[in-house]
Structure formats: structure tokens, C-alpha cells
Length: 240
Ligand SMILES: [Zn+2]
Picture 1 (tube, rainbow, N blue to C red):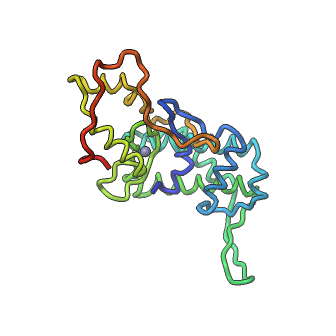
Picture 2: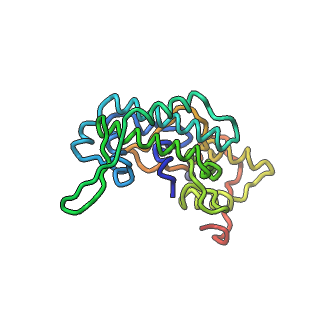
Picture 3: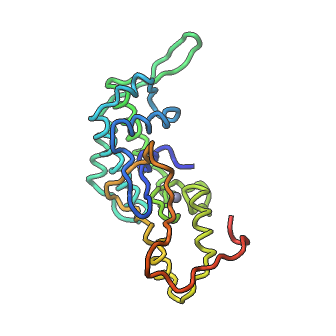
């Protein structure tokens, strides 16, 4: 499971080696917020989502890129990107939020915000990211090395290597291929497997698009410079 604090930073993916921006429009952001609604720190109604504005999109993309930049420096053991730190903190304090008691029909707590709800939800996401990068879980942050994957995840077990079971399955399947020549990396690059991997850099990234298919993170061999004989797969002993 991906850490909730990373969800916005992971609003990105790669298709056939190309990073896609899933927050390309207000509609994309509204759809992403709708999917995330049960896990957001601020309650968003349908009317709130319909009110998603261009400025929200700009804020979301800026925050997403800051989270990814910090995830990159953290996982690579580098000093934090100070521009990203400044951006993250600015987003976290953008919209004051507080909890209030409601008593009808039953006692419950509700989160209130001074600004618009979508803006407040983004600020809450920024605050959660502050908690991640400042707390002990940052040591468990990893970049997924699944074929073509550009996501980050928080390791919940010492042996976890992938953001999802799907990435693990693709990586294991990749490892079962027997390459016909000694230079495995060259053969794999020709077939597009290595080329499909987009580095988890802090570069401006992207989000999963509502209308796009799920990322098909393995590319198909189309190069005319393919090795003379195709790779063979072992039986499924190591797969799965
Ligand atoms: Zn992955």
C-alpha cells in the first residue's frame, strides 16, 4: 500500500518510457480528488469537486512536484531540495484547518477550513507530507524499481521492493527471460525493457489520467535491431 502522504507525489506514471502528467486539467484533478476523497484530511462534497478551479490545478501540480523532488533526494540519500522544502511548507500553511464537534445526529468531529475546501484538502496533503519527510517513516521511503514504474512507496516490511504486487510480478517475469547474448543490458535495452524505466527524479512529473488506461509499464519490442533469436522464458517456477 502506498503511504497516503505520497499519494499526490505518486500522481504520475510512465507509459512506454514516457512520463505522463495526470494532472493536466482541472477535470483530472477533480477526478483524482474524488478517488482520494475517503483518505483526504478535509471532507470534499460533490459540489466542492465541481468547484475545482484552475488555481487549484496549479497548486496541486506545484505541490506534487515538490513532494516528488523531496522523495527523490530522500531515497537517493542526498540533501533535501531546499526549493522543494520551501514550496511544501508554503502549501502546508496556506489554508488554516481545525476540528469542531458536531452533535447531531450523533457526536462526531468535523474538519473545518478557512479557505475553499479543495484548497484546504491540498494544504492537508502538504501537511501530511511534512510529517512523512520529518518523521521516521522517511527511512522506509523507496523508489519502486518495477519495469517502467516511477512511483515511490513507504516500505512496510524489510523485504518489500515494489510499490504494488503488479510491479513485483512484472519485475519477476522480466528476470525469468534468458537473454541470447552475454550483454543482457544491451539486449534488454533493444527490446525496450530498460528504456521504459523512467528515473524517479524530482523533475516535474505527472498523474494518472482518468481517461488513460492503467500504465502498461512494459514496452513491446518493435526495434529493427532486435537480437537474432528472441528471449525464451523459463517455466513459471520463478514467476508469480
Ligand atoms: Zn511500481
